[in-house]
Length: 526
Ligand SMILES: *[C@@H]1O[C@H](CO)[C@@H](O)[C@H](O)[C@H]1NC(C)=O
Ligand SMILES: *[C@@H]1O[C@H](CO)[C@@H](O)[C@H](O)[C@H]1NC(C)=O
Ligand SMILES: *[C@@H]1O[C@H](CO)[C@@H](O)[C@H](O)[C@H]1NC(C)=O
Ligand SMILES: *[C@@H]1O[C@H](CO)[C@@H](O)[C@H](O)[C@H]1NC(C)=O
Ligand SMILES: *[C@@H]1O[C@H](CO)[C@@H](O)[C@H](O)[C@H]1NC(C)=O
Image 1 (cartoon, rainbow, N blue to C red):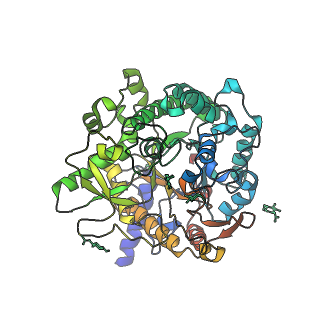
Image 2 (cartoon, rainbow, N blue to C red):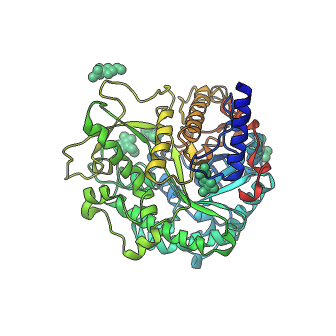
Image 3 (spheres, rainbow, N blue to C red):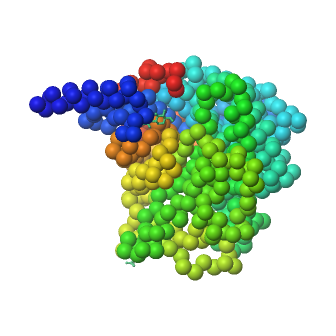
């Protein structure tokens, strides 16, 4: 009886899948006893992720021009932990070696970004194109493809060419829209024949908030009333909205350019958003409970809903009034449905406490969402768990809840996890290869989050189709320099940047070693 049932179920699954993969029943998960690639729907893509400035180094090679982050770290060393990305982990020279690591992981795909300052060293085509830069990305992409690794390419991962900063303050000016479109069009034309997965912008929320509201990341702008930030210019609660406005218009222009690019046919474009999940600080307080949707409208809907509906979430418009710029009807038309999938980067969660009386004399993004971010709940609990060396609390439930929320709120679209990973930092004394590769906390984090994603897909029926671990290698972690490590491979900065396999890499390799790689199933569709 049991066997018969099992066979029948198996037959139904096969039939459902062959008949129509996009049934109302959602993703089809094979039966499995141990979590591995084999537990996920057929064709699911697993990869690792990086960003140009964080790994490439070689900042003066191939006619590369200076970018925002080069100049920022040189001018304000303390804001980059007194470190720079000049060498980073030398991916520029060592990418062939690193592609072998991707292969040894049994991974299917690699998320990379193209540095604008390598292609247009001075920010615009008319000021010159670096053929060496263009060639570097061809070589890298070709080497990935040759090794059976699918490239996912981010067009902009925060490294604005410095000349555009000097000329008109980069994303603070609407002039960026035209220049970004020209650049995006160029890379689509150049690589769109062989790259079919694109991300226009990485983490617009972080870029606009950290860069222009609290001054933690380049260009480090904020108002004087922002504590401990040492900003030398800026206007919190204003510039952040302006920057995102220009960024969203730039995205819509790039999306249009992509749709007009003949050789790009069959490709997809999205944005990699970076929401936290929120839990109410006091579960018994209705205001705290009600604040979650508002917190997510601000942190996620700001850039996501706008690319679906063509305008900002109504709640943001109500609260912000004149501080939120307005789109023209032409801009709204271009923004509407301007993404082919939803990219999500998830790391951690936080408690949300409702704010009744915001201080209108000191506008700030978080306060604008009428909440305070609280590490502790009303009864003094932390969210999830946090090892002493961990950068953020580990709360895998938040990942599952976020996925379900996005499915329900934004119409069951295709979702790809563009980043998920675990950061840790050690004291200078304890930061050794031996300690670094024994990363049991990262392995645990990945297990928990892969399980949460499995539950979101197979139980909640969220259509997630890909997952990328941040990151393949330890790398230059922006304001934290090289002090925060996120890699599956340890970089020995004191010894010729040698790569060392961590426990987490061994785990991912074993996880991916089971089941069938998508490249072996239905290559044409991927
Ligand atoms: C998930 O999204 C992809 C891409 O849009 C689609 O091809 C697939 O049918 C969807 N799967 C389900 C179960 O809806
Ligand atoms: C701000 O400046 C003070 C004093 O120079 C310094 O101690 C502090 O580390 C700086 N903070 C940041 C975030 O750079
Ligand atoms: C940068 O170096 C200065 C001087 O050595 C030191 O006081 C400061 O703490 C360093 N900042 C960081 C973030 O490491
Ligand atoms: C919360 O816990 C910390 C120690 O973990 C303790 O120092 C603090 O007094 C507690 N606060 C409250 C309000 O119970
Ligand atoms: C450093 O590593 C690179 C890349 O693996 C290698 O080519 C070079 O020979 C090494 N240098 C030394 C001094 O070991």
